[in-house]
Length: 147
Image (cartoon, rainbow, N blue to C red; front, side, top):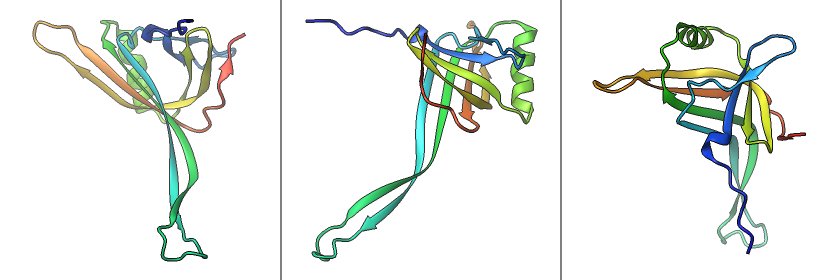
């Protein structure tokens, strides 16, 4: 038996572009405990009756209307003004940032994302936690296999 090749949670990297030309992508240390990528589609459901057997239950057809992706990340917040300024500007600004979501060294998805949620929490006798949510802002593009 051959064991599966595993992908550790730390190998799921959310890399944010710096907007330069050429653009440089880096995984922010802010996303240091949890991260995830979710693909969704909005769809219309249509009931298609059977003309030969109109009393039989009809089948539901699903017509995809739109695709989207979302990224969630969480971690312990670092105490760096540059980190807070970066996420504050991204949240307040109208523009998306280019993001790459890497699966280890296998490959990645790439596209524009909006920062739609940014939350900082702290408890007594603990470090501050942070969570972010990103939503795709247009085409995420097909998976790109790493060279």
